[in-house]
Length: 137
Image (cartoon, rainbow, N blue to C red; front, side, top):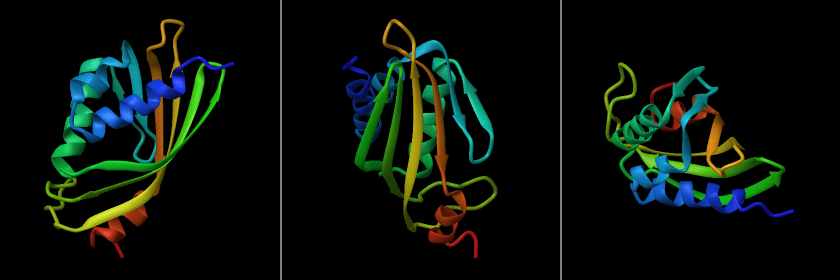
């Protein structure tokens, strides 16, 4: 049964790539969570999620997602895609490198009955990303 949640995830990713961060954030419920499981950071609430998206573009101005595959079951969508960007801002204590990264991501989106994202969990290979940026060996 098609619920439209796959289309919502694609719309979030498209808006993020176009830097339409208010549009992307509006797909999340007011009290939604976005969890970066690579560093175990949880962003709680739509304003915090929007701020996270903005920080990502501050670090990677041309952040993009491509080759997106979406799998839907009930109120859950799993997104598998390649993310990439050029590092133009600091990552933690590390200054920008000007180098590009391209890695595979897996994100799990859980939707509420109103069609808003209530939880998003992101998984990616941070070590490979840092190696591509010249920040790890």
